[in-house]
Amino acid sequence: MQTVLIWASNILVFSSYLTYEWAMVKGRAKPHRTTRLVIFVIVILGFLSMYAQGDRVVVWFLGICSVQSLIMLLMSFKYGMGFERRHSRTGATHLFVDILCLIIAAVGIVLWRITSNPALALYAAVSADFVGMIPALIKTYRMPETEYWLSYLFDLLAILATGFAIQNGGFNEYLYPVYLFVINSIMMFLIFRPKLLSKRI
Image (cartoon, rainbow, N blue to C red; front, side):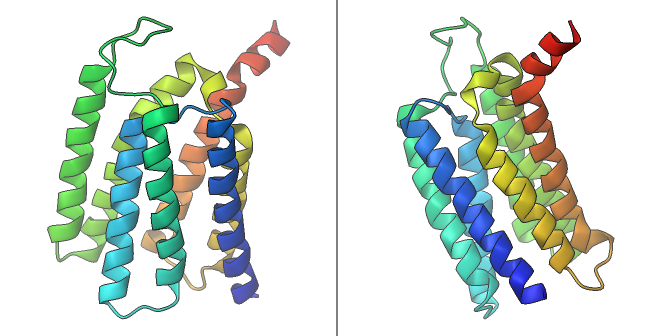
């Protein structure tokens, strides 16, 4: 059963990447460049770390994620948003926030890589990921139409499959999947927030 769940998670994550890339090309998603850069760095470092440790199972999954993250990062420079002094449509200025989040995330990534404490490394990685997500959260709150909900649904299902695949896990084993589930749920809520508010009115 564990093998089935792992394969299901991998397929769902791959589907999430493909649908988001399709949405970018069609103009239905505009990813934040800061967020995509931080995610790419975290994924590629995770891949290199697992490869160096001799892992030949998870490394394939992380390898696929690394390639897809690079593709999405490169596509974000054409189809995405972020690092503008003033956004062409809203007039909002987010450059300072983008740079600040990028610096803080970079510090978290460095702490993750240099610490010899596995638990501290995990907390640093989660913190770096969260800070990297802040620009995307702000963007989605202000412009929910710039994100594609189906990709986040695939992510949520993949995270659930991963969580059920964990056997005899403790707090640290579940921390990252729970964090990912929460952050993706928040993104889904922000995407549908205007529709939810309109129904209440």
